[in-house]
Length: 255
Image (cartoon, rainbow, N blue to C red):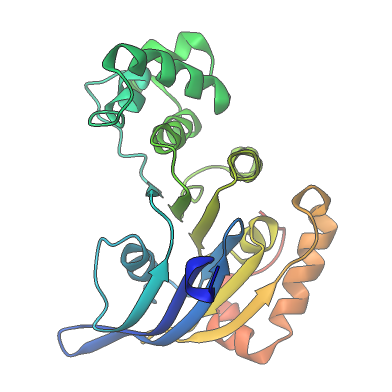
């Protein structure tokens, strides 16, 4: 298997909206089966880059190569259909799939259990679910199509700290169990340290890759002490500290 077919490779990526450059000469790779994290200041183009990797947009210059057949997005807003209950929102993703229609509801209920929801939650509508429950339904909907690449655009940012930790652990477990590759967008360096195998730090617009950093420690061993220490080590790198505008981001208790 060659370098361009073993995961995700971004080469010389540049993009502009009209006369305004957004992304400038970004290159990186993410091996299959790993979790990458794009982090940078607000508005630097992280979500634009993620959209290009998922083929929702196309770069002005450069190349994106990957061998994933089923990339799926999970956004900060769960984007659930308000007139459909939880099970039907998940089953909606199966329209057009090879799974027989009569099996859609069973598949949806199975996935609700996978993401930690109860059978009674299947009939609840989005307005009857908490924010964390809605995000779990969105995750189950993403898993319904059996993706091989998860593109996560700040899916935990609206959750409180405790629930965020639960969702981080759930996503890591599901990625491991299903053999997925994932790319997460966040503005939180502690979350990046807690979640990612490879952290990609972007500068302010036009975004460039300021640094790449691999974390070898297993997820289960990334306790608060490790996360806090690793954040400190990263911020000791002048290029990373400058890119993240530390005076604005803060780096106290890990989230």
